[in-house]
Amino acid sequence: MPVSSAPESRASILLRAEPEDEFEVLEHRGAWLQVRLEGARSGWIQNSLVKSSASAGARGPAAEARPSATPAFTVIRETTSSFSGDWPRLKDKQALYVWARPDGSALTLAAGEKLRFAQHIFMERYRQAAHDSRNSVEGIVVIFLDKRGGVAAANLNDIHFWAEGSLTSSAFIKRCSLDPPGAFSNLPVAANREDPEK
View 1: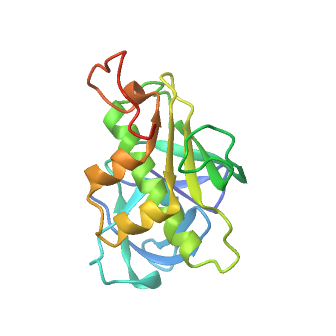
View 2: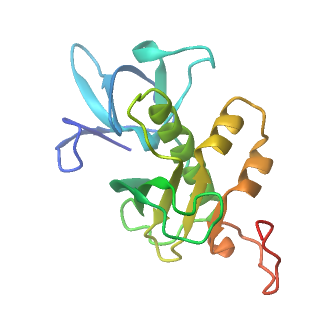
């Protein structure tokens, strides 16, 4: 995982971190984390590529982060607009759209990896929205640009219940929109499945 000299995708790479490496987080800036390196140096890591190793109660810049062994996706664009799909939980509501592409040359990834990445984005962007008094979005949509494609969408209220533990991960996933379902599951999908939302 690359550690960059600045919080931008075109910045020079200072080093490549291994999954077992741990860093002290100095600052959060949008989709980036500033981490302490050896000596007085620091670098930047994309938020989506790390997972916290701090206890659940830890907050703020003192938390630690380590490279995630989960999906190597890069968020390439984010925008807010009205949800134009037919999914009832977000229809005609404001949503945050997040486009993600695989890192490097990996054009195909295990479907479960995409689902884990989508869950990571849901939780991360929900936490950002919860601390923004100007937030107007009611849902988050992750659009995957790998070979299999796929769109994962979640309602902010459902993410809230999942984050506080009122919803299990499996119950939360059942409330999400995964389109097409086969892009997020390694199991064959029946052609005649019923849509639980209808």
